[in-house]
Image (cartoon, rainbow, N blue to C red; front, side, top):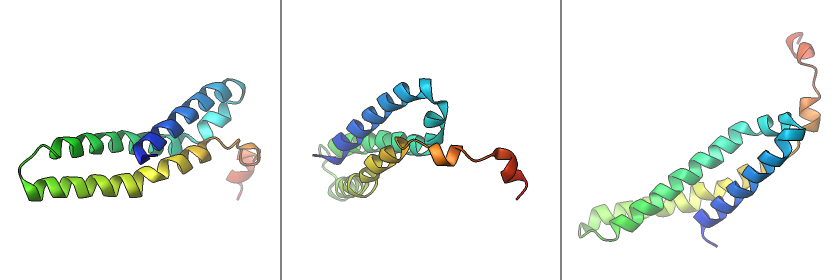
Amino acid sequence: MRPLTKALEALEKTTLWLQEHYRENPDAGGFGAVEYQRAFALTYLGYNWMRMAKAACKLDDGPFRSAKLVTARFFATRLLTQVPMLCENVRQIPDDEMALDPQALLEV
């Protein structure tokens, strides 16, 4: 399966998970917010890199086309592959972490 397809599937699964779990436990949605935003941003950027690669394939400028394709491949293989793990982290229920007493943290 291609990296963008995997990223989109993981993001969709996580979005549905957040919608379901946020109602019963708002901490479940908020706890993974940063990782969710990163996953969303990487997926969006990956989509745009794939569009740029597709457009570059139509160009006659060999070095420019080559640079776009190499960069798109790098993004797909090195950055988009992070999305499923980020999404998996978002879907972890934060029971222990959210049980901390906020007042106790201020006293440290």
